[in-house]
Amino acid sequence: MKTIKGILLAMCTIFGTAVYAQDFSSFDADYDGRINQTEFTERSSETYNDWDANMDGSIDDTEFSERAYQSFDLNSDDFIDENEWDESLNTGIGASFGEDDYEVFDTNRDGMLDADEWNEGMNNNTWFESYDTNEDELIDNDEWNISSFDDWDVNDDGFVDETEFNDYDAFNRR
Image (cartoon, rainbow, N blue to C red):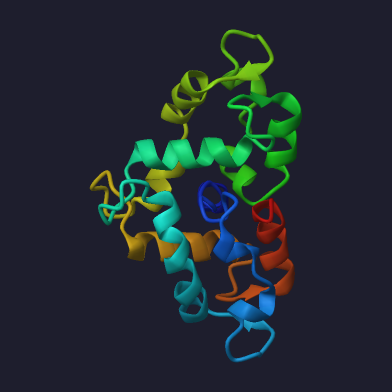
């Protein structure tokens, strides 16, 4: 179950957003050394718009996939090489790919994932579905906040501590 949760960071986390580039204390409003769902939601809602590219109030699978692709493309050259893949897998968002190997996505074996290969690989991944908890093929802001918090809360104690925060945040500072 945690593997499925890890799928989305993401998306939060996922993905180089300015809101997550803040330090831990900016999330920890009551300064108790941990972030609860309410504190997280206050900040995470700001990031939702980064994923909702067309600003229609929901994230569809295309928006989700494109934003995730951008997150893995660390050098922004419109391709994901194996080094970028490996580096991204060592982040919170990378957990969403579980045991998926680079070769599973790189179907033409040229060492460079393009957007088409990425989308094909994402069709076989359950990351989006793990956030779309009401199964309407859209991720609304509430689904986003709850699922993202669950991803960040790796030890499932109902809080995101500074270590959990930094494990995801490090990916998003670029």
